[in-house]
Structure formats: structure tokens, C-alpha cells
Image (cartoon, rainbow, N blue to C red):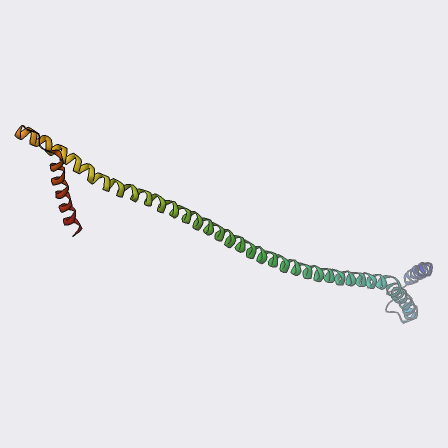
Length: 195
């Protein structure tokens, strides 16, 4: 096919040269009706060859390129759509993972909080128990001290009174009678405080 086109082009060139040499003799050959038939012939040949070259060689290549580009664009669009769907799936998975992580974190926080509150309550109970025991022991010691202190105060008061009377009178007085008087006096004071 290419050989035919080359041969036709050579013939066209040869004919053009003949026309040019023939036109040397007088005026413009395009306007001379004597050359119109040859001009129409070569016009048909030239545009026929051009038409054949365009339809058989150039336009199929352009058509193939357009088809290739069209198919490539469609493939790219399909690939983009698939990637978009995958991206949407990944985004949904990401959101799901974040939500699950938040729920787990909240659960861990609540569990830890409950454990800490339980530990604090247990330690508070133990501490309150220990404090109650300490307070009980201190109250017991205070009541014992209070009970014993009254006796000691009475004994000290009786001894002091006996010494003062001895100093004032110069004679020793019976310490049991002074102790009885001091005890009576402390009972009276106690009764006054209780009322």
C-alpha cells in the first residue's frame, strides 16, 4: 500500500513538472480552459491520494490513539473509584477503631476509678477501725487515769492537810480522819459537777 502511494506521488510530481513547462508559453494556465481537464485530473488524483492516506494511515492511528486514551481514562476512572471505595472503607474502619478505643479507654478509666474508690474505702474502713480502737484505748486510759487521779488527789490532799495542820498546831493529827474528811469533800464536789 505504501508503495502505491509513493508511485502515485511520483506520477503527480512528474505531471506537475510537465504542466509547469507547458505554462511557460503564455499566461496563467489556471485560467486557460485548455488546461482545465488536466488540472481537474490532477486535483482528483491529489485529493484522492490525500483522502486515501488520511483514511487508511493517519485517521486509523488517530482513532487508535483516541480509543487507547479513552480506555486508559476509563481504567483510571475505575481505579480511582475503587481507590475511593477503599478509602471510604478505611475511613469507616478508622472511625470504628477510634470509637472502640474511646469506649475501651472509658471502660479502663471507670474500672480503674472503681478499683481506686474500693481501695480508698477499704483503707478508710481499716483506718477508722484503727482510730476507733485507738480512741477506745485512749478513753479507757483517760477513765482509768480519771478514776486513779481522784484517789491520788485525795491522798495528796490528805497528806498536805496533815502536814499543814501539824505546822499550824504543832501536833500530829490522825491521818485516817483527815482522809475521811477529804473523801467526803470530794464526793460532795463530784455530786455538784454531775448535777
